[in-house]
Image (tube, rainbow, N blue to C red; front, side, top):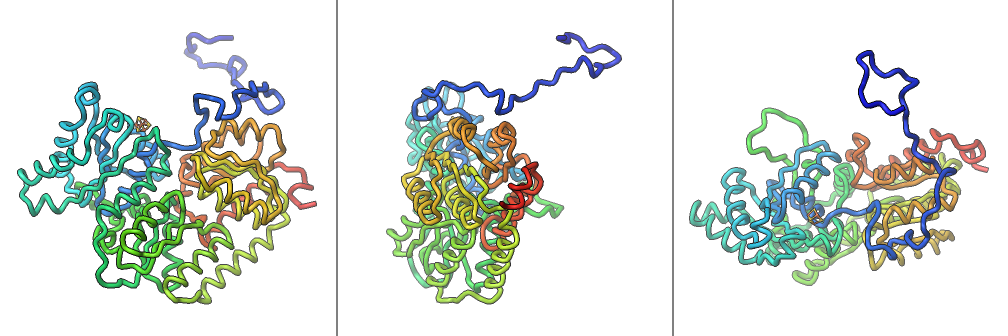
Length: 488
Ligand code: SF4
């Protein structure tokens, strides 16, 4: 019965109709022509987001850094909303607020006025100018606009005060790539604009972590601290997106965290740069190597045993420091935990999706746990993703179906045709997991349906323990037949 009005006494249970999500046995087969993303002009259930988001994430990782978005309000609001959903923290992002006039006549007026207002009201240490689809399409000459905005600041505030605000331009036309590319481009733009010439060695190493969570950055710092190594982390979002609440706070509010501008300026004096995620920071590390001769080591993200070993080997190579007992114990604890739980994880068929570097790292870890990756997807197209997965597959004798730059619609359609025990990915996979009636283990940046996930690491040996506990507990919680939890 269709209810048009709600009776004053309420709705009795027998008149309530709850629509049930159709499960696999009621599934209607899709037109096979439209399943491959490559055959379609539209993306369905995308596993990537907008390029400016990556550049804004990076800018917020600089102390007193504020992104200024040269575009419409929606390009800013959507990102702020996403950060607030994930981290439950405020994200200060300014916008040029494009309307029809800016789209027709160009965004110069909005930009120059906007930068002036931002500086006068907020006094940021750095502004990351982030372009968008609209400003790139109309051809805003951002280099000239920045010069004009600087002239206005000098006129109003004087040379000295105006020079205190650094401005970095990051070109992020979203039609040319995803958030992953936005972060990568930001890593190069910051190094190109801010890093000074080589002077005196600082005995530090540069780390470009990629779009990892605050808990991951803290774990990287822990590993380096135990190794006795000083570092410059570009971009350190740990005490920005997981900032302590310590009132009273001043207005304008800036979290205490973030990489200091002086640290970025000093990066050419470091012993080397490790970009943990090749697609998110590799560009910056390579640029610094070309520009200043600072050795670049690109990836892999330290997820699981072998990749964490590699990371620490790289640190050791750059600094000459050896791995201390404390880290050998952490490694041993992860191995012990793997031995304790292998009868739950062995031979489980797992599907993994997300950003390319995280997926490659998690796929290797899943293989280390004896799992069988049956399908892997990177939402961002990558030149190296397929080769990286094939290398892992050859090493562990498995043959996952590889989706490179595809969407979750194609991924889901494939999973419906095969047997899968669990899915590892971000919370964009909730409906797929429900439909397939398997657990979803949440990993990656886009996790907004759980609290505290951004605080726990998945990198390092301790991160491996956390992730393994989640995988094993999800298997134990789930209603598998006994022969699939107590392994064969
Ligand atoms: S895709 Fe383009 S228009 Fe849409 S929010 Fe991103 S930058 Fe703005």
